[in-house]
Structure formats: structure tokens, C-alpha cells
Image 1: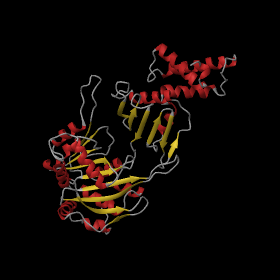
Image 2: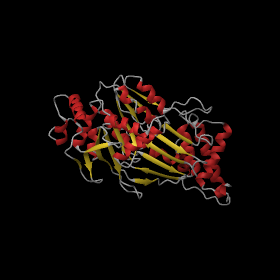
Image 3: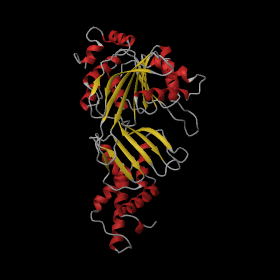
Length: 431
């Protein structure tokens, strides 16, 4: 395509990139020289426009154009400002279109125009500082980016029609159960209940649809863990950043290299930490065969926490069973169900508003907390402890307590100051 067929911005940007490629400059280190070449490209374009070149219009503000093009090449183009705003938690790229969720949970569109070529370059620059690759041989990637402050998930053709990426910013605030009460996700009684649950070596499953706040809740649960507990956290791509006790640690899976070797799977990491005397194993997100390794947690005598995508708390239990069966081990579904029924103590389910229009607010709230009782049949036996009828309604205690063995174990863990019943009734608040 000729310069006349392009916008002024894209024409100058392409000319600048040709100059940079010709001199083999590095946008990460040669910014001074690159700034000179961009200024030259702007002057060249302006001169051609003054001479009446077909389709070219003179620039109203050449200096602003130079700043915009330079930001695109040495920074992140129109997304630079979004990355600098800490309140923005998610950014979505679909070809040339960019949307984001602002600090009030509203879906917004980026006002600055951009192109698919430019957004693809942004994704490439984000990956440049990682050991992950995105090309036709590896068209899907997940990586920690922006100095480990965000998670990038990106897909390019031939898997997708165009570049498709989501950038999830890790919250800079410290997520706690008290903070989730302030946000309206938890009631004070439910937050106190979950604090008590985390004082023992219980197992908790956090469920919900994407974007419901599962990772935030898991972070708050980890924050409530006693400093004496040894916690081992494993994730596909690390999102949890809660300070842990000195004898706890985080582990991150690794994809295979370009030669097809060197992969370290989530399942491998769960096997690893089972041998490291954990009080609790934490799996950031259970998707597949790593769930089978969690059935071994019961034999190891430790608790675990994990998140799973599901539409309800009971669906989450079935989703975990199905994930465990993906391991292909020679075990039946009924055996896996019985193991999880004796291992999982609680399921906390979250939900969010359906964002249907740009500008809509987004609410994330805990919908139910279920206790899992020892199986009385082939299916799970559960008891609702806290229930919210719908988003926006109050999260209420049902009057029930977990099965006596679990309640006694939690009461023993929290000591003489509180009882689980008093916390649920709201007569005491441990937070």
C-alpha cells in the first residue's frame, strides 16, 4: 500500500520503522537515535504534503505526531497510558479494537485509534522481556509482563482470526477479607467465618465464572493463613503475590522450549510440593490432570485451596472430579468423588454482573459458602452455611454449621477467644 493509502500516523510510523530497521536499532536502548529518525520521518512527510503529494495532508501539530509515533515504537503506543493507570485491572485487545475495565468496574473503549499491526507490536514488546514466544509455531502464550505486575494471555492466527489478547493487572492493593467486606463481596460474619476456616488445615475450593474475583478471594484467604503454616503455591502463570511465611513459597509452571523440551507442568509441581511437608497446597487455577494429584493431599495430611471455573458451588465439585479424571489414571469416578468428599471441607462460590454494554458497572460478590459433609451416597453431600439470593442481596447465615468434626477442628484451631458459632452469629468479629 502506498503512503497515500495510509493515515498520516501509520505512514510516518512505517517510514520510521524502515529507518530503524535499516540502522538495526534497538527500541529498548537506542531511544535517542530513534527519536531523531522519527522526527526526520515527520519532516519528510510534511515536506511531501506541502509539495502537493497525492492524498497527503499537512500535519496540524508535527511535534504531537512525532511524540505519538515515538511512543508507539519505544513504548506501548496508545496502550501506554492504560498501563500507567494502576486502577485499570483488565485490558482486552481484539485486532485494532482495545477495551478495558476501569477502576469502577465499567467496560470502556480506548478513545485513541489504533491498528491491528500496532496492537500486535504491543503484544510483542510485552513478551520481549520474558522467556515466552508468540509466532505461527506457538500461536498461544501466557506470560507475566510489565515487571511481573500483569498476566498476558495472547492468541494469534491461525488459531484466532486476528490478534486476541487479555492483559490482567494484578491488584496493587493488599487483598484481605476485611477489604472484600468493604467491597461488598463478603458480609462481616462470612469474612470472619472464612478467617476461622483458614486457621486449620482445611481444604477450600473457590469457584465462579471468569472475572468473578476467585483469585482475589484466594489471595485474601492466603493472607488469613497463620504465619506458622507452610504454604506451597503453584500456578500456571503466577498471579498470587501475598506475603507468605518464611518457610512457604511460590512455584510457576514452564512451557516447553522451542525444541519441545523443558516443560514443567502444573501436575508436576503439585507432585513436587506434596513431598515438601506442606500444611496447605494452593493451586491458582485447576484446569486438568493436576486435580488428580490433589486427591493425594488427603493421604499427605494437608489441606489445599484452589480455584475452578463453575456456575455454582455444587458444579465446582463436579468440575474438580472431571478434571481429576483427565489424568487418565486407572481409577473410577466414584473413587475420585469419595476421595474429594472426604478431602474438601468448603466451597466458596462467587459471581459477577453480566457486562452487556460499554460503560456498565461490574459487581463481584460471594454467592454461597457450602460445607461438604462425608458422602452419604455416590454424590456430594453439602450444607449451605452462607447464601446470597442474588447479586445485590445480602449474604446471610443459614443458621447451620459445618459437620461436627470440621467445626470441632476449626474451634480447636482458633483457640479459646472465639467459637465458630459466635462468629457466624455476629457476636464476635475476629478481623
